[in-house]
Image 1: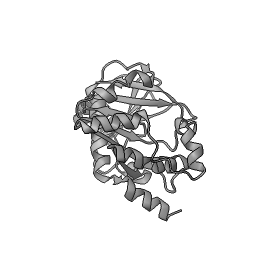
Image 2 (image 1 turned 30 degrees about the vertical axis):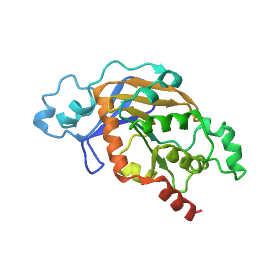
Image 3 (image 1 turned 120 degrees about the horizontal axis):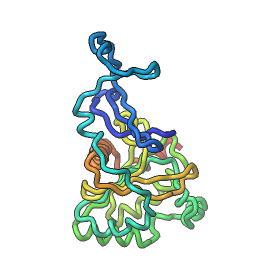
Length: 245
């Protein structure tokens, strides 16, 4: 089973923390073990396999409330959101590669040494249209050290997105871990709609979970704010990666 980081109220990266267990719809709680004997003696129906931890009420209030689990939707079903959002569409990319990139005709041209940043697409045309209307497309990509092949491909293509109006920035994976960023990809629209990606083990997009659950959206917005504060603009980050190759 997998664990999905939900959120923490710790500034030091230790505890307390909540994790989601998607396969069981349960939550795993990380906190300080309860050792007060006066408290332990009052606990009821304790099994030998159980233990007890302390967490602040604010952690549960902020992250634990949730609506029913959203269903997995095809990515195409949310395409209208990229035109209809009112202010900001923001993306976090966490993976080391994407099957959609490897299957793209751009992939072979990039491997052949061609410039892929100047190619047009419907995606770039929409970015230009939305940003011309005063909206913002923003994205933070997490990059390994050294960068993977898939990450280098995205760095090579990024100038085209930037020229169209999308602000793309980058963080190292070490920085992302220090900031306790989620380990899943998502889009958040206007700080109130979250589209969280699902992938298989081959980096193929299976779909997205769309939700307006306040706890999930808040966690995404907090991750966005933390990542954006430290992320480096694409051109500057790409130069750093080239200098290490």
